[in-house]
Length: 259
Image 1 (cartoon, rainbow, N blue to C red):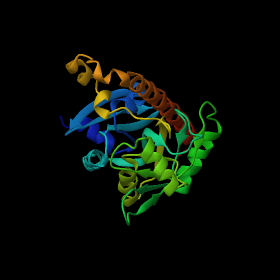
Image 2: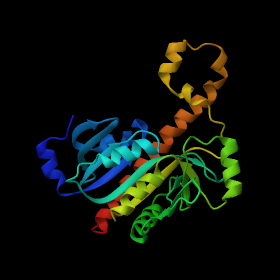
Image 3: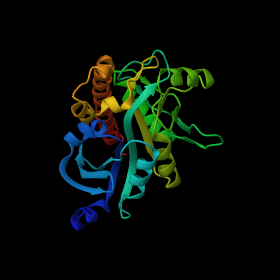
């Protein structure tokens, strides 16, 4: 379904673009949207409405670089984005970063040889620092992050930490988000919440799909994975809620600064 003409006319005015990969990552923001209009293009879902008194376009891109690049390319061409936020879950590389701790990277890198890196603008970092000062429920770090092609398990994260000890976390989309908005010269901020700590052993990804369990009738062989699956699912819920709380505080700071 394509966006209708009335919404398109409204999009000509400035909006805040918020992008997350999964339904869980955008769930709390979507609940706060007022007057939602929804359309889909390919695998991407777009929600337009008002959030915290600001016009906002919420994008569910899908996981990974290919999906987020497609979603951003399919943004309405008439769209005028004031600033862009990328929210989501991440794997921590630092032992002190716990579940639902936040990392706001001043720089994002891609795990590829000779890949460029992208730096977050000073004004956006100042907005984030001001927000973090009043966000006492969860710890907030400002460490570089790296985008990788697939989920990093415990051994991968430990090895990467040894290789690049300054990195705070890994994810699968933020580099492409930063690249897109850097080229357009649009201010952006990446907000990542820890869903799996540096020493957490990830369950096989197929076990995270509830339809897999239903189809296989909970056969005995993977039962030993149930604790890890449940632990990760609850961690994702806490991480996504922490993201939403930070975004809500950030929106208040944005309004107070007249941004």
